[in-house]
Length: 90
Image 1: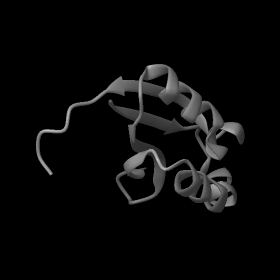
Image 2: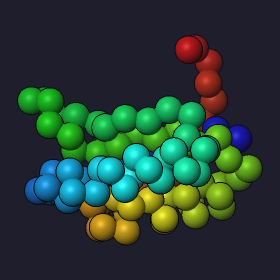
Image 3: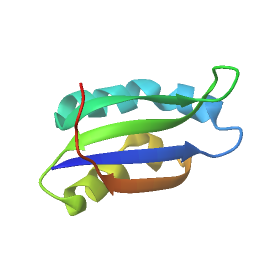
């Protein structure tokens, strides 16, 4: 099941994001369930959130992955939306 995580950083979260980036990328590599991912950008190109597409068994697994993401554990996000997603193109 493909699930999109749409995460919004807390205002002023760029330093938190940068400080936890290596741990976040290591988590992605070790869990092996991320189909694609990347930062969301503001109008000047600064990172302000994340879009992560997970390939997991169900929404519960997606929630568990999101809860254990080093970014989430560091308190980076103001909100995280977990949404089933259907790949059509790409």
